[in-house]
Length: 158
Image (cartoon, rainbow, N blue to C red):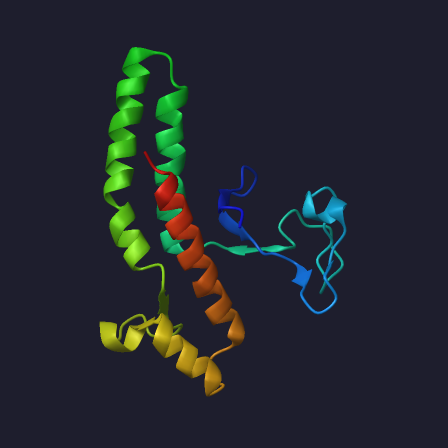
């Protein structure tokens, strides 16, 4: 799966959503839409550069930032800039184990001031909620994507 990205236009983090129909083996959108050259929002019809993306989870953002900063160290030639980039990469890298650990945790909406046990639910609990039709299946898909992306990106870190 492609990793999350920071949009240069709006400054928000997004994670590409795969558009694939396993029953027919066909993609829901054309290649041009996948390349973001003309992606129309399926609900409104408005051409939007993020029509087929969804917000990245906090864990995905943290690990992606660490990976970006680690790549910046390798690409920096100037010694003072490389030292600063290395320090930034080390600081970001310290957050990665915790981010990977929290990749499979979902924060329930409307529970901001509640206890942590009520506010945050692990993958297994969200899976039960989906089976009981208490949460949409998209929550589970988001968690699966988050866990997979975080693990893959963490493995790429030097």
